[in-house]
Length: 469
Ligand code: GLC
Picture 1 (tube, rainbow, N blue to C red):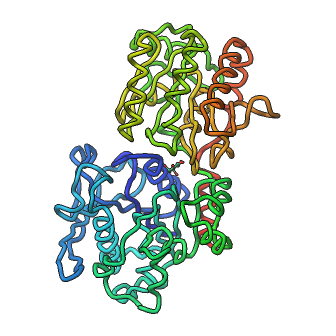
Picture 2 (picture 1 turned 60 degrees about the horizontal axis):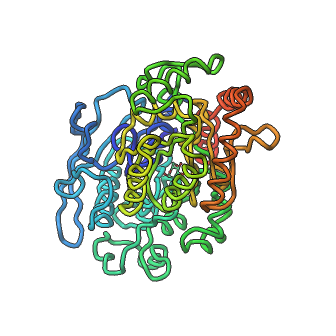
Picture 3 (picture 1 turned 120 degrees about the vertical axis):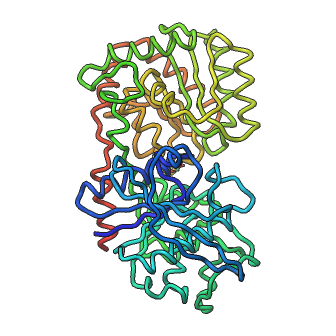
């Protein structure tokens, strides 16, 4: 099958969150399964762009509201990705350092999508499916079906995968002037509650819709930032497929970022040495339990309550624990995490950054990973933790609910709680500290979790079934 993925992010080219990891891995596994999977994304100015060689494969233009936007499609000559990667450059619009966060984001991503379609209609590669990810590519199914300029693409099937429905790509009506001519009978498809809504439009127009876990799929019908009715209506074509992880990038037996490697049949010595080295680096006592949080510092991830929970846990346990926090996000939340460093210099470290190598070392060294998410469509960090023998402490929501079983339940190995509250987090930290004292049990849990398979194989097959439908 010929598959074209369209996404704003793709690891290792440009990563903000888990979307990049999925788009960097799924096509690779689809290629290994004998399909032809390719990825197209905007040309962000990242290290990957400068460190790799590229070939120009297409040059053309998009005309939007009378303005001409020249675009160039470049192809990566790097063969290590495991699939063909294309980037779209529109000078001044897409060639910027950040993936998101500019005032003109809606316009930038509209022009990106129009450029992809302009190219696709002339390209000799004809995909069987165009697989769009999140709202940044959400207008593509509409334009392919109802845009007069893209009739050649009308018969190609489209699938939308939702990685996060909190963000929907809203635009005011005035922006319609930037769209190329479409069948006006279909204008309603673009709208949700009086605004152009790219995600809602994709849910309506794509042939199939998936999201990244079965629990999140169910949750979308009663909690999806205003789209609840839409999901109820379109339920028949929606499916939850849990994400896999890239088992080559995330393998404690070969991980290039780890000072010491370890395997699931011999976990203890390797994990201990990694922890020892990391604790020495941060000036921590390695005998104490080590908790980590890795992720975006936003409310959705529980970032607003976690600093308070950590503060109280330090007080309750007279600092008999160490905590390392890695991530960035909302400035207020960053400040709250930073304040902890002043009060607990012996037991707390904070790195406000995106640091892939450090994150690998944290998964390998920590005893517990904290994920108090309010919204977690799938969550990959808990899967990385499981593969590295680190016990995840998670709130039962979305994909966390589908992948972590509490150690108190049959077959369990993690720590789960129900509410996004300081109290629930502290209660879970208390349970973790208790468990830490029972070394044998801890080791048995580690072994159990490292034996679970979260590779892409099964999920890639489910996507294929969806394409075949
Ligand atoms: C988004 C979601 C996360 C999911 C990831 C990949 O970042 O917030 O839960 O794992 O996408 O699908």
